Image (cartoon, rainbow, N blue to C red):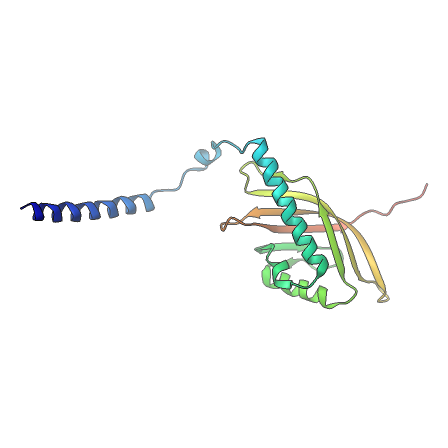
Length: 180
């Protein structure tokens, strides 16, 4: 009798835990209002995250300056990223970005380096933007190297895998300094 009761309790226990797991898995996600009520990260946490993101961006810039590891360089962009650079068509998506980066680095004149500053986060902490300055050397109209001094904005997103990646990368040329 005890053995039969134990088997029934085990069967009901397993079935019950599966039912609870199923109910939990099919519950509706929290509403926007509920998500919006979450406390924002502390200033200290935001500062640490900003420092981490600036380090990640600096690592990316160093990789790009070396110009050797194309796949690693491209891994810093999201799959749906967009790049808008001066004198270039808009580049959309990781495959197009990889082709753009590979083509750029195949030119012996091409060089790039940037430095970003002041990370600003979205209210939910899942996106951030950083202004920055770039130097990019490209072939000029006559083929001779021409260095562009750029300023830009990089918008970063926290992807589902927990990694921060650039989703929008925009640069334009700095205005010429005019003599008085």
